[in-house]
Amino acid sequence: MAIKLHRCSAMFVKGPHPCWAAQHALDEAGIEYELVKHSPVRFLRSDVKQLAGIQKLPLVEFEDGTFLRDSKVIAQQAQAGTLHGPGESAPLS
Ligand SMILES: N[C@@H](CCC(=O)N[C@@H](CS)C(=O)NCC(=O)O)C(=O)O
Image (tube, rainbow, N blue to C red; front, side, top):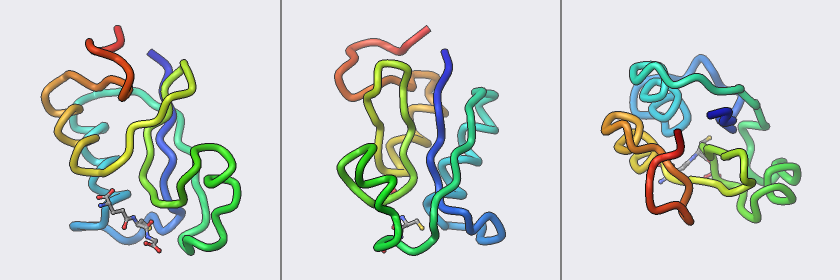
């Protein structure tokens, strides 16, 4: 499964920061991903808006072009081993 984690470039911000939380959860679960960094300023994320239709990060992008949003959902699925796109009924393998 080749996924991409889109997150803001403020890598130094940890703790409850949503981008950090999502990345940390993927790392803890041993899930491999390509890291794609974007502006920490939401209104400068026209690239994200064009790609996913929204500007909030983090986002997990799946091979089929779908996106999973919200750090809590990403972390929950990563921890449960059920990471899958919103249109998928089962985890990608
Ligand atoms: N509830 C969302 C919150 C996402 C969020 O606030 N992300 C930050 C990461 S930098 C962001 O996009 N901030 C820019 C803004 O809200 O303008 C989640 O947990 O994923």
